[in-house]
Length: 299
Image 1 (tube, rainbow, N blue to C red):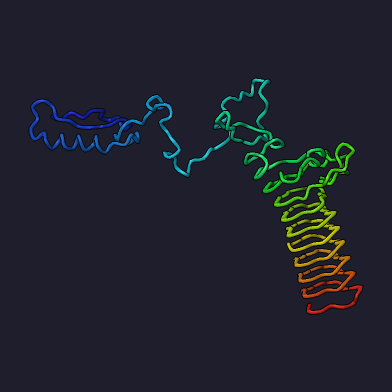
Image 2 (cartoon, rainbow, N blue to C red):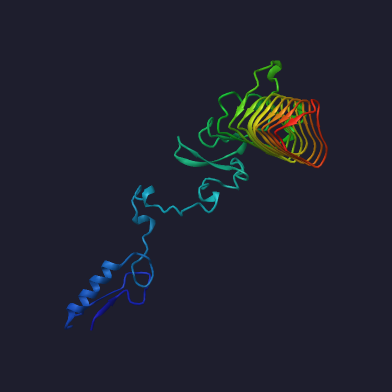
């Protein structure tokens, strides 16, 4: 009678081989070799035991062996050195997981000091003090995402994240922010901005010009210079210069000290300009007043 190896143990490889005196054993052996060839170490239905860690050589698993669907369920999957009972180890609450190239491993990092993308270009930062914001220099900000949240850290600038703030009693050249995305729940003040995107529930002020900016604010926006291109969706807006080629969706009043050209303005309040309106689409629930008193090629 044929003998079944590992009979009744589905987590191991189950095969049947002939015993002494069996006839027609060729069919039994053919099936046995088939079972050996088909086994996959799945640990079920007698298809072979699962391979344990000891059965894998160091470095045997390479990135090409991993599915794109593999992900970390939680930070605890990599924070194996953290001991909550050891007071010398800092808490991991609220930490980011950042790749440390020198150590070739993921390490927990405080968000306020983390720079994702290698720092500089492509980095992400939480700017939480006046000096850090004042030192945000020209050329270092391309492609950066900033988070501004801690108003208490900006007491010396009136609770405003002020990029024009003079550091150390000096008046440095204020950085012209370019290609920056800012998320803020405190007021933001900067000089000139180009391709700057700001999402906030607080006031935004440009002391200079705003070019191709995209601003969404639940509060007011003030631009000391010109607006050239871009889109602003906010509460009331006050522009010290001209508005050219821009879309303004304003839940409040619009006050422009210069002219309006090739722009679309939607306002729930009054619209006032100190010069003409040209080639623009204007809609308001309030009044429209131009000091030069002429509007042409507009509707």
